[in-house]
Length: 611
Image 1 (cartoon, one colour):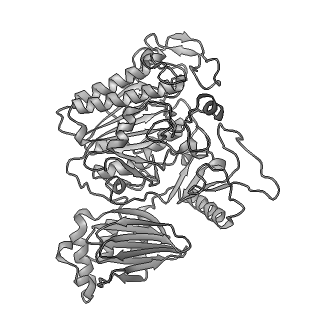
Image 2 (cartoon, one colour; image 1 turned 90 degrees about the vertical axis):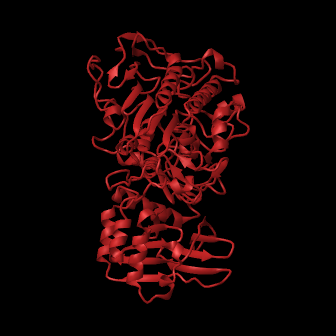
Image 3 (cartoon, helix red, strand yellow; image 1 turned 45 degrees about the horizontal axis):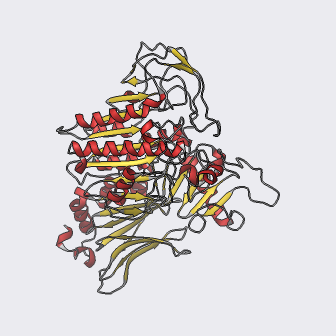
C-alpha cells in the first residue's frame, strides 16, 4: 500500500484503538460551584474537611491546570457532554433542550461501544416543554434522548422552579404545590439558603435532594456487580450550589454553611468510593471528580471566614478570570494512572468525549466533539503535556484564551460577577487583558501594551477559530492535504552513536521546532519554540522513524511517525492537532515505508523489534 494512503488511514479523526481489551467502568462526579481552593489536596490552608476527595488525589492523578469550558452551569454541561465549545452554540439557558438533536455525547458514544449509561442528578440542559407542561406526559429531549439508558434527577438547579424529581422520562410527582422564596441573612442574595419561589411537587424537599442523589448513585453501582459489560455513571451533584443545605450531621463542620455543604459533598464522594469497593468494581473503574465552574465566593467572604475557595486564583463563578473556570480535576484509574501524580497538563472538560472514546476504542468523526482532544496519554503517563490552545466562556467579549502560559481576554473586566464586570478602554490604554500565568497566576499585571505580538497572535487565532468552528481539523482537509500535495519533503531519522544527537527537525513558519533527541539515558520527543526556552518533553522509547511534510497552498501539514514507540503525531500549520498510538497499524505502516524507501539504509535498518 502506498504510504500516503496509509497516512490517510491513520489520520482518521482522533484515530485510536483500545489498548486495554477490557475497557474500564467510568464514574464521573461533577460538583456544582465548587472552588479550586475548597479541597485540602488543592489548598493546604482550606478550612473544609475533604478526606475522600483527598483520597482520590492520593490514589490517582490531580490536575492543576484543568478547566471547564465556561464559568457558569449550562454551557459547561453542554461542553462536557458534547465535546464542543459552548460559545459556538451561542447558548443562553432556557427551558427547552440545548443539545442539538443527533449530536454525539459522551453517553451516546460509550453506549455505542457496549457501555450501560446512567445519570443521576442535575440535568440543567432543558427539556422540550413549557411552564404549562402536562406532567402526566413523558418529558422529551432529556438524558434518555442523548445517550443515557437510566436517569434519576431533576431538571435544573435547586434554586430554579419548578422543583420535582424525574425518573426516566416521567415526573415522579407533578409540581402541584407552591413554595415561597428563601434567603439567608448575612449573605448575598445568591448565597446561603437561597431559592426562588414557585411550583414544587409534594414529595420534594430541598434538604433531601443531595442525600437522595447519593443513595441513587450507590444503588446503581450495586446493581452493576457481576455484570459482564462496562458502565458509565454520570453523577451531577446539585451542591455546593445554592441553596446551601448541610444536614444536621454536617452542620458546624466548618465555620460557615458553605464549608459544611462542601464537607457533605465530600461525604457523597466517599459513599460512592465505598460502593465501588463493596461491589468489587474499584480496580476496573475510572473515577473522575471535578466541578462545573468556580464558586460564588467573594473577597469579603475570604476575609470573614479565613477561607479562600478560589486560592490562589482571581475571580469567582461567572468570570473570565481563572477562578471562574480553573477547577479541581482528579482522575483515579487503578493500574493506569500513577498514584499521587500531579499533572500540569492543560486540559478541558470538553476533552472527556475524545478521551473516553479512545478508552473504549472508538474514533470521533468530523461532526462529533469538534473541540475534544484526547488526553489518554497523559493519564497513562506517556506524556506530560496537554492542549496547546484552549478557549473558555460564552460571551465573545470575555472569552478566555490560553496558549502555553499566556492568557488572553479581548475585553476589560471580569465579564461575570466580580467587580469590575466591564470597563471601557481609556485613550492610550489596553483594550483587553493579557497575562503571563507562569509569573502571575493571580492575573494582576496586564501585559497587553507590553506584548503586542502576543495580542496580535491571539486575535488572529480567535478569528481563525470562529471561521473554522472547530479545534480538531476536519479529516477531509487533512486527507486533501495528503492526496493533493504536489511535493513531499522527507526528513529521515539518523541512528548515529552519539550521546546527544537531534535525529530530525523541521521549522514551521511560526518558528516552531519539532525535533527528536536521543541519548543513552533518555530518548524523547521534543517540541519547542525558537524564541522561548519553554519546551514539552515526553519520555519515550524513541528510535528511527520518519517525518513527512505536506504543503498545499498556504496550509502545511506534518506527520511524525516513530516505529519503536508506536506513535504518530499530526501537526497542521505548526500546531499539534493529534497524537495517538499506531496500535494495530504499525506493521502495515512499516511495510509501506520500507516499500517507498527501498534503498534507504536507515529505514531498512529499523530493528526487528519495531516490526
